[in-house]
Amino acid sequence: MNPPRRIGPYQVERLLGFGSFATVWLAHHPALDVRVAIKVLAENWSHDLRVRERFLDEGRLLWRLDHERLVRIHSVGELADGRPYLVMAWAEGGSLRDRLAAGPMPVAQALRVLREIAAGVGVLHASGVVHRDLTPGNVLFRPVPPGGAPAGAGSGPAGPAESVLIADLGLAKALAAASGLTARAGTPGYMAPEQDSPAALVDARTDVFGLGRLGATLLCVRDPVETADAPVPPPLRAGVPPAVAGVLRRATAPSPAERYPDASAFAAALDLATGGGSAAPTDRRTTHPHQHRPLRAVAVWRTAVPRRGAVPRRALVLRGVAVSLGAAALAGVAFVTLGPGWPDRHSRIGTDSSGRITVALPEGWRATGSGWIGQRGPDGALEPALVMSPDPERWPTDPGVPGAFVGLSHSLAERHDPAGYVAEHPHAGCVAAPVRSVRRGTVDWYVAGFTACRTGKPVIVEAAGIAPGGAGLVYVQVAPPADASTDFVDTLLAGVRLRP
Image (cartoon, rainbow, N blue to C red; front, side, top):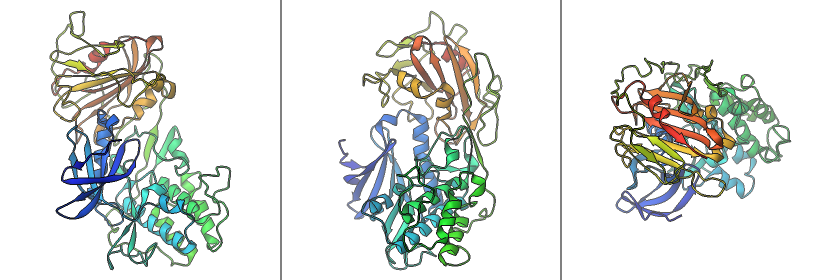
């Protein structure tokens, strides 16, 4: 990995970490003499509008919450190659994962850290947000000046000059905008059972499970994440008040109904178990007009692939709003017909570099692409893909440029069915139409439409199917023209041809 020398006005110093979707760099602003952490979207996801949207949503969420118990964001920007980045506060103290790698924390310190984590997650719950991926790597430490620690923090996990921060909200969802097409999200070992269920309710109790597993990691003799067959929680370490076992046991109950309702209730129970008081101390910034309003559950469905011609009985609905994707599919969005003969034998044809994907191009569109970046087949080569658009270079970053991405993958077909793959492409800032199935060309397509999107493309359609002859799973993402016909997407799908 070749580190960039500069990102905006910042001089890059070193790599802090990387994951599937982003890389984080430590950088220095010479004029301000300040160091920051800069999170950059991974290059292999730069073409995916869904991932770009989720990446930027993290920045928007942190900016809106702006709380001392959460990692703060300073600004956003875009690299020369179009990838977005987030400039965030640098947590100089490292992560809980780093500290645990050096050995167990003293019991008193571990209890304080767990209490501070619960307070930070309580900030999210008070704002109607579920984190969904609470792990030691997402708990950070940062020195603070005297008197600058969050209210109720006491002496802090490692002394009066250090605070605990909750980080990496890339999987978090504001409950008011959560999608019925939510993808499976979380880290094994810390992920609640319902996050891997075909019909899950994901709410604040999901994070309570994560808090319980963090507590077991900090306070038990054996890490339950590493000993899957151990009871939860395993035996407590010497010096941990015995009543804490009951708190962790309830927090990690398999059924959400048996857990504490949210992080504040977990913190209050932990205080009682440790003799810290009858209720959790109130953070001066967690009081919220909706703090005591029940958090709405998010239904997560993984519907089986319907039979040819069948209509799915379960509509996957975003924000509780269903919009028909037929003649009234994109209500309020006018479309221009591209001509009665498109696609037909007179249409211009676009082909990927392997020749395995051909598409009939709408008038004025062109195709480009030499492979599916980040998606490799059994032979290690990039799997076939192309982008078609009036301006393929601008389509990933300019909301006003229509276009489509078409990819064909053997490896994805081994791990996903079309319904499951479409379900992994939610657009939380949009209104979702019921998922439908339709046969166009030689493929039975599973299609989900999203309209009235608050950011990015105003309309997005996700489609997937199994290509004939064992060619693999075909995935299409479409941003229709601002004034395309109501049958634009179906016509485009009808013009897709694939070969093994």
